[in-house]
Length: 504
Image 1: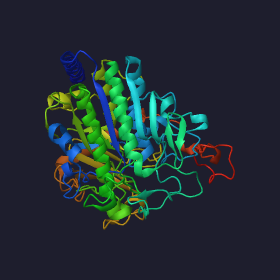
Image 2: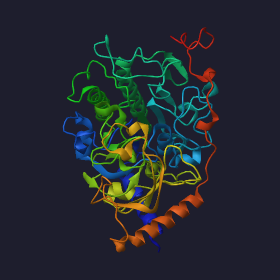
Image 3: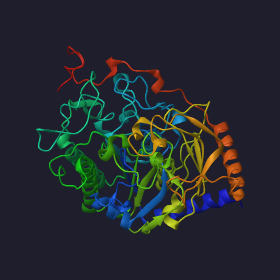
Image 4: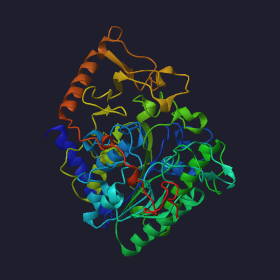
């Protein structure tokens, strides 16, 4: 029996074992922070972050040290976590979607919600969607397998932020937002219920939504999937009266505390409704910190650079898996990715993943057996992937090879000039090679001349890269379809003059 068959057998065995412990399918809660760095949480070493609820999940659950997302910016990373496929396949590139974007996550893509819904799951999302709105709400979550939605359909800086205030209400938050577009809307399902959104009470609304959703599902005896892609800690930060001024990290710390408090409310509700023991909670973030915002942009810890780059700080994220009495507390150094969440949830729910070309693998062996990972390698795409340049970097085992490097505006202001936008695209032949166990900061490239033992590693990485790129079929760019101001969400679509009149 070959190794892949053995791993498949073990994964199925673990799934059946978990299902035997409980007669009902497991519930899933997926928490997805925004622009959060590897070094931002207390449980990942930040000395001044107030994240008691996430720290408790990490202490009683499994904390990942080598967990990756697929892109160093928002929309493509969100497409991948929901579909288990690199963003290049679904066309969510280059960059991100905007309020008036004509495109969005294609409806022929299968999301986690669409995998679980036929099994009788109640599915909901609250928070930042950022995978398109489109004409008549074509790309909203309710068209992608979610029964209910409460949130903002894109980043909260993508609109005038004159009402983006901290506590007390007369103190403006630090930050600048887009102008010349509609104010930021709050949507329930496909209807705008508030425009501009009241940021001071937004997290309270989300907590109430989550509480109602979990209670309703529990009362019906219905398994559920709750996806919470938070706005925190994306710039500009905001926080309501319960969190503003309460941390030692300023506006960023306050926003992080408010996110953590919502996590606490969710866990409390799970306990209160008696479903905690049958719920898998998974936390991670969409990309690294926006270092150009300095202390208000997050922290990548030991990792090099941040948002917008294919260095570790841009795509290596904190990740926590918690399932009471099912996941043994500890730390895993196994290689894993946001791509792996869909196939893992599908396996645990007792179904198979979609037949589409998946890039994710089942993580059950990591979660319930302490390893090993089925993931052999991780491929790093830039914010603007192309068939011409292909994969910028590859990770295999403890090694990472950079075939191309480039800085980004998002990571300006740091002392490391490799991170800056003025660090233009550079090809490396031979590739830069780093031992991420000894050198997670990517400071010391290993030369094959000085380290001949790594020559085979580079050869193996090159073959993996070639094979992967040969199998990659780029979908039509949804971002490249452009924008139309008429598509910007407006609660009074016939009002005049736009966009200033879009208020309700």
